[in-house]
Image (cartoon, rainbow, N blue to C red; front, side):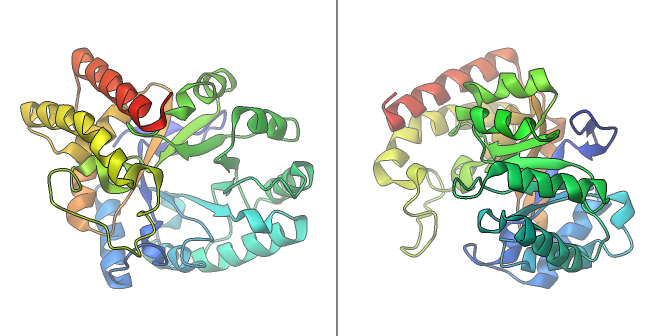
Amino acid sequence: MEYVTLGKTAVKLTKLTFGCWEMGGAQWEHTSDDNNLRAIAVALDKGLTTFDTAEGYGKGHSEEVLGKALKGKRDKCFVATKVSPEHLRAQDIRSSITASLKHLDTDYVDLYYIHWPNKDIPLEETMTEMSKLKKEGLIRAIGVSNFTAPLLKQALAFDRIEAIQNEWSLLQRDIEKELESFCVEQQISIMSYSSIAKGILTGAFHFGGVTLKADDFRAPRRLFHPDHLKKERPLLDAMKEIADRNHILLSQLAISWLLHKRSLCSAIVGTQSEKHFIENIQALDISLSGEDIARLDAVSAQALVEIDGK
């Protein structure tokens, strides 16, 4: 297992992070807690010790499952969780971290993110309280998620930010425009979420005949619009050719493309399946040629131009 350093700290985490969003249920179709506990057990057995959750994932249920799974192993693991945007007032942050620590059955979290910014609550108030939590030892580091470069710079005026977690995949590359270079310059770790574009980059929707139910939360999302799915097809075709030639899965290729980014600290990939987890972790051992990476970059960029019109 490859380990990387969090920001300017001495704290280590694994290059692949187990994302626990699906385990909370809510938007995702939930399997069972027992199934998810087994998936985490397999992760630990394979040496993956970095986990990402949030109070908003199933109203704390994801945290509860993770806390149960890590019982007796917490000191060997890196745990990140997030405070929701509606809880960014000082007193609400305090209540949120107290609840999260209880759910996770731990005395501290390694990384505590502001999940989304909230323009109606002063960033200074939020960051001041986050700093207090760090000084008290309830959190080891502060992170932000879904922040723009200007907002990240504002946050840095109040305290050190060790990590940013934004969406990053072959079908979402906005982070590469400004944030990526700024984070490298400031030694802020970049974590990617939706690393396989909520399932699109597995090929299920282009080659597997999968369609979303009308009430699936992904249905109205940008990348799942029927016209956009068509515009994504050249990328998926290129991915399939490269994956078949390298005898790997499309999902593994998508994850590997991210892992080849020198600026990336850890790719967050969620699953409720032991089988899919093992497939995901195998992406750590895949080496892509410069030619294949360049082709993916180009076809991806063109797909995004077609989808977004710019």
